[in-house]
Length: 391
Image (cartoon, rainbow, N blue to C red):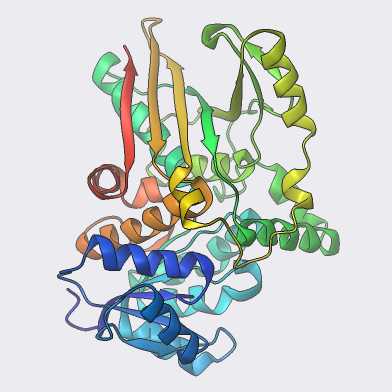
């Protein structure tokens, strides 16, 4: 589709756990694709093995690329319309790729949930990417597409029902079955290590407006303690992905010109149910250290059966201008950390590829860059459902 580039899409890290799922999805969902794509990674031998294991045609090219080899990285970037990268933690292995994409006008999507690093890429490469037209879109997996687009979807519903957006939204995870990825755990640990060495990173991690350069909105709800929510008849507990999702949602609002209002407030928690059992569950979740102590390493994860058995659902709740309760939901048909994430990442790349007119260049977000067009793609292809529940 991009006549100037050899490949429309390149999957970088295609021999890794999540990268191979992205390649498998592209192969199965688009067997007669009208776009060209290639698999890239450090080892041609490993890429060849993955291509064979996944039943991917030998016509799909393989590219040897190493994050530490500038020449190979630059050659890949110049050959691609969009680069999908699953090579993380991004703060350790992603810097040069963002730089090359921003410099050469190549669109880019990743799975980053690393806000300190994203703060850095905005400061360092946003202007460069704007000049080249490159759309650098972080967080195109479970963090933060369901939440970023979930708020966008609720706000569109609010406008349709009441004629205006709402300045206060609650994001609440209603169900989540499946594990986080080894890559997510590695990214969390890399962030904590960086914060120990650079105390200023702590301020970035704590600031909900860390990704809205030059803008700071009102004080935000904490969401860090169990609470009972009368309107939902449920207890809620802190949600571990809230720290990154809220930052991305505020950046979307910022990049779109504050359609949600400059006084917009958002928090994100996990519903645990009513009564004593709901309270006990909320208390347990609030104290849970499973993720921080998980032995999972990058490249490790659940079986295909476990991925297929997983699912998730989040609701977005607000009060309309007339006092009415507005509720929308986003649900995925696979485990959040791998099965659904790999589909979201691929569809985000294809949305950019198919819509070169979308957004300006720069370091952006899924909602600000793609909005309704990405929602439409996810519903049509990726097993993700956006629903209006009330009114």
